[in-house]
Amino acid sequence: MSKTSVKSPLIRKLEILVRLSGEELSWLNRLEATTRRVPAGTELAVQGETFGPVVVVRRGWAMRFKTLSDGRRQITNYAIPGDIIGLYANLLEVADHSAVTLTEAEIAEFPPEAVTDLFRHHPKLAIAFAWSGAREEAVLAEKAASLGRRTAQERLAHLLLELLRRLQMVQMAQDDRFVFPVTQEQIADTLGLSTVHVNRTLGRLRADGLIEIDGPVIHVRRMPELSATADFDDLYLYVRRMPKGVQSRLSS
Amino acid sequence: MSKTSVKSPLIRKLEILVRLSGEELSWLNRLEATTRRVPAGTELAVQGETFGPVVVVRRGWAMRFKTLSDGRRQITNYAIPGDIIGLYANLLEVADHSAVTLTEAEIAEFPPEAVTDLFRHHPKLAIAFAWSGAREEAVLAEKAASLGRRTAQERLAHLLLELLRRLQMVQMAQDDRFVFPVTQEQIADTLGLSTVHVNRTLGRLRADGLIEIDGPVIHVRRMPELSATADFDDLYLYVRRMPKGVQSRLSS
DNA sequence: CGGCTACTTGAAGGATTTCAACGTAGGTGG
DNA sequence: CCACCTACGTTGAAATCCTTCAAGTAGCCG
Image (cartoon, rainbow over all chains, first blue to last red; front, side, top):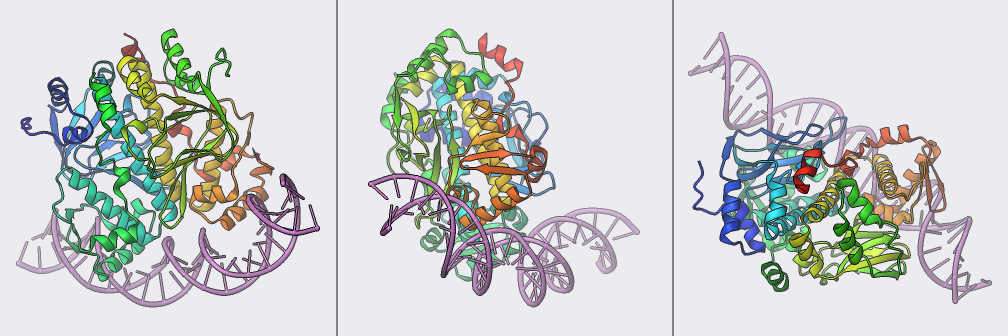
C-alpha cells in the first residue's frame, strides 16, 4: 500500500499547471489508491487488442511504441512517474500502440468510469488532464522534428536533454545525472537509427566529453555544448505555469 | 457570413464520436458564428510568439510546423476543415509551433474564455474535444513511426493514404481522388526528405501506376498496392464510433 | 518578355545501414 | 563452481539510401 501522505508524481505534475482544491486532491488520491507492483516487461497495452484500464505510472519507467507489420518498431515516448497511459482508452475500442514497463514499476489503475466522472464533476481537473495531453502532443511534435530533421547526434543529444528535464520535474534527477534504464537497441528504435549507429554516436558524445556513462547512469558533463548541438529549448515541455487569467476564470 | 443551417465540418467530426444535443449544437454554432476569409499564407500562429485565439478551419488547408534555429523545418500536420489549431493555447504563453494557411481559407475564431466555458458547462462536448485531441496525438505518433522507421516510398504512400482518408471523413474527397495543395518542398518537410528525393519517389509511384497526378489533384489508382507498400491501417484515425458504454455514461 | 516559383533530372558525395565478428556480464543448470 | 547461454555492447568494412550540388525546363504573372 502506498503512503498517500506524500503527493504522487501525477499530482505534483498537475499542480504545475493548476492549484488543486482539497476535494480535487482527495478525488485524485482515491483514483491512485490501489497501486500494484509489476515486474519489468509487463504489458500495459497491446497494439491491436482492446485497451485495459487507464494506467498511471507511480514509480519506474515504461515505453510506448508502435510496431509495423514486418516487425520494425518505433518507440514514441517514455512514460515516467506521473505519466498516464491510455487516458482516452475508453473512447477507443482497439489500442493503436503498445506499452511495456522497462523496469520494475508501481502503477495505479483507474476504473473505466473515472474519466467520464472527471469531465462531469471536476472541470478544473479535466482541464489539467487535457493540458497534460496537450503536452504529450507537443513532445510528439518535437520528436517528429527530431526524426525528420535532426542528425543522429542532434537526436541523441536532444533525447537525453528532454529526459533529463522531464525527470527533474518529478524530482528523479539530481544535478545533471539520471538513471536511464534503456538499451541501445531501444534508443535506436526511439531515434529511428540502427543500434550500431547509436553506439557510435553515443561513443562520440562521450569522446567529446559532453556526457559520461556509468552503467545505466547518464551524466551530462557540458550542458551548454550539449544543448547547442541538440538545439534544445524546453518550451515544448510546458514547464511554465498557466497564465493568471485562465486560473481565475477556472476558479470563479 | 456562413449558412449555419448546414452542419460545419467540426460538428460533423465531433458527431462521429458523440450524439450532440440541441443545446450543444447551438453552443458550437455560436462559437463558429463569426467566420473570416483569409488568403493563402496567413499566419495563424507563430512559433515563439504568444498564441492568438483558438482557430477552427472551416474551409481550406493549413499546415502546422516547427522550425529549428538554423531554418530546418518539420511540418507536423495538415489542418483541414473541422480541425482546430491551438485549442489549449490559453494554457500556454508561447506557441511551440507555427501554423500557416496553404490556401485561401475560411476560419472561425473562439474567444479565449470559450475553452473554460466548454469544460465547465458542456462536459460531453469537452470529452469530444479531448477525443479530437487524442486523435491528433495518434496521428503524430503514426508520423513518428513513418519518420523513424519507414522508407521514403512507404512514407509518401502513407501520407497520401492518410490524407485521403481524413478528407473522405469531411466529404472532401470523392472516390480515390483529392486536391492536395502542397508543394514538393512542403512534402519533403513533412516526410523528412529532400525535395529532390520526394520528386523521384513521387515519380516512381507514378511510374508504377499506383497514383496519378494532375496538377494539384492526386488520384490513387491502385489502393490495395498503395496500402500494402505503406503498411497503412486507418485504426489510428479513430474512424470508429465511441463504445456504447461510454455514450450512455455520458448521457445519463 | 523577364523574373519568379515549382518541378525535373544527372552525377557525386555522405550519413547511416547492414553484415559480420568479437567481448563482456549476468543467470542458470549440471 | 564452472560451463554454457543469452542479452547487450563494441568495432570494422562494405553497401545503400538519400542528400547535395548543379543545371535545365515549364508555367505563371506583372
